[in-house]
Length: 388
Length: 171
Image 1 (cartoon, helix red, strand yellow):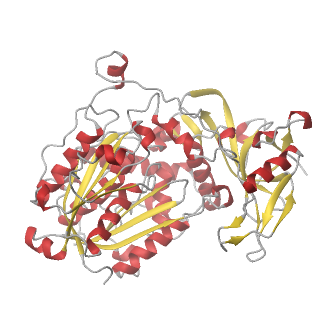
Image 2 (cartoon, one colour; image 1 turned 180 degrees about the horizontal axis):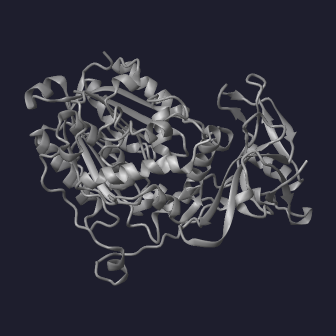
Image 3 (cartoon, chains in turn brown, green; image 1 turned 180 degrees about the vertical axis):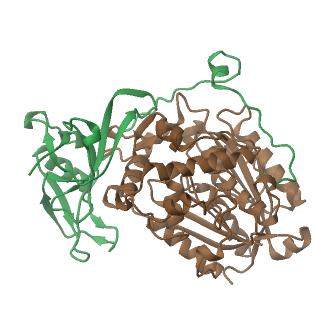
């Protein structure tokens, strides 16, 4: 037993993901939170604590946006915490929710993740330039896509991976998204489409990348006692893990995310998982870029280093394969409202384990799933293991 | 996205609707300006760049020669023990050829950026900088040897841009 109390997810909600949504961030947070409560058969008065996950204030141009979003997240007159670990936020927020309940301090916690990237003009990418070291890196003219390109190139070089194999991830996830009613970029595309798309920062091309998005997602977390009262089919948070690597990113070998492995090992130890590929039925590795899904499958120990492209090529990661990855359509297909995107992955595993995923349902009555997010300067991993 | 949920909230608006003034919005351009202190370790590093040299710091416990230098070793969590110069040559650890600027606007001529593992530093340690004089970008390879091209001494100001770029070399 880790923590004082076992924690279950009993409800989840998510809005549309789109490049521009008319709703404000607060309104999006409200919709996702309300849907999660309705799914749980609960009301705001049943909620004892609220966790908000949302990424850089610079997207919104509203400083301290945790406070700004509080009302929409249902935090009025409640203990409230905003957490932020870059792109890792969407899976870290439910981890923070977990310790609110597992500690015994609260029986219920509403976890809401929101992102509205469309406010930042001309493009929210520019807000990312301020993540780099002001003395040594910004004078070089850094931009966000570079760091992915540098990492992707190193990964391809180390394992002699072809771009064709990486493109298969984009093809798979955008196709999976065709069955997802919230998806922004669902499409039937081919490997050739990816390879012929605009070069952004070699080796990254246009269709290797997820879009920027607006959206929100939420879950309701409760203690075991409450779970038994409100539902017959709770989904348990059986493993949590998180880890950060050094900020000296030019001193690390980017071909492998050690920090994701450490986070995964922490979560698997707690969940009693000894053989991840055998024991995990469905996975939502973080896929803001197609190569990142492969990178993270390896970090999550779902396969050996450098083996993820082979599994993808062989169809193992398709929805009907032995190890379905990103059955939701992932960030590549659904969109990438940063914190909400990670939380969407947690919602998807929740629905998959409850058999509610409709056309996206993976076969074989899945019992155990993992969701993971990643962020900061290629250095943060957050991992959650869910079980029915 | 549960099959039990029939309606997902969200009203989409298109980018052109902003341009055409079809949606109500407020615009704000922040005027915040910053002046950063370079810190103890990086001030020394910048001073040496002005002298045309690259300085690293060393840790006697883990035996690393670290660049960029720091005043503490993050692994051993103790003060670093000394300073040593590394060379202005090295190897491309990884690189990217960028056709986009930081604001996602498109560039006619690409920028090549690389992590360069410097000779004399511990294995895998280096800095990020630009690569030029590479000919056709398709010929750039990981593992390629490169050397710093410095600004003339009178133009150096103690900045990372005192190194103009790195260029491929044959040895």
